[in-house]
Length: 280
Ligand SMILES: Cc1cc2nc3c(=O)[nH]c(=O)nc-3n(C[C@H](O)[C@H](O)[C@H](O)COP(=O)(O)OP(=O)(O)OC[C@H]3O[C@@H](n4cnc5c(N)ncnc54)[C@H](O)[C@@H]3O)c2cc1C
Image 1 (cartoon, rainbow, N blue to C red):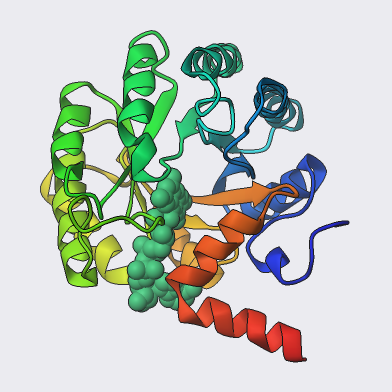
Image 2 (image 1 turned 180 degrees about the vertical axis):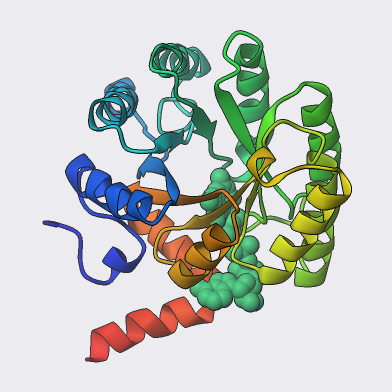
């Protein structure tokens, strides 16, 4: 770890791909799978977007060479969506092709609501050709239950999360209880989609999703439970010991500030951790 300060290191595996692969090996040793994320969003030039795409290609090749059990997650604004949608599409095609060649999988993270429709449009325009692409839907958005039904109809692989961005009330539920209720409804819908991934640290949401999976007749290999690196490691192991497939999102890289900020905003205990670090 070079630039990465000890404050962010709770949530971020390190500065570079070597650090990330090391973290994935440790997870795999406990039977836990990973999804690697090269931190970065909002690439504002073609060069930065292409460099990010190259890094994602290298991630896929490194996973293949090292034999670690991991796929990758990326953000479309990182590979050029804000610069030129055609550039993002070209970059995504290159990444999806390489993932297909290496028999791996690419998850497209979901960003703020300004990008929701554009992200879904690009994803669905490539999904039939590249079924090794998956998407993320956010339970705080009012539209998401309908998007889940659409994903089921199109046989798309979805990671369901609550949503990490600040969104207005006309687009997003603002109360925790409303987001939670929508999460449970969407999880139930997604039991009909291929390999739904329930991404949350919330035990009640996990319990509700597992109940829906059970009611739909799914077995443990039919779905995944996903959590973020640095959060609830004991819980990952418990879920794994109970036979569930657990995948941890492993971010790395030097552009950690926006990711780090989202983690601080969503949970006061994370702020306390940083505050303790600052004053100790
Ligand atoms: C694998 C993964 C991928 C994600 N991808 C995206 C994405 O593409 N787009 C996006 O917008 N967001 C993404 N997120 C972030 C997500 O939207 C939420 O912001 C984040 O997960 C916090 O919500 P939560 O479901 O964990 O529950 P919260 O509402 O934060 O917490 C609910 C409850 O869970 C328990 N809990 C939470 N954290 C802890 C902890 N550290 N220790 C003990 N108990 C805890 C507590 O009981 C808490 O009250 C992702 C999250 C995960 C796990």
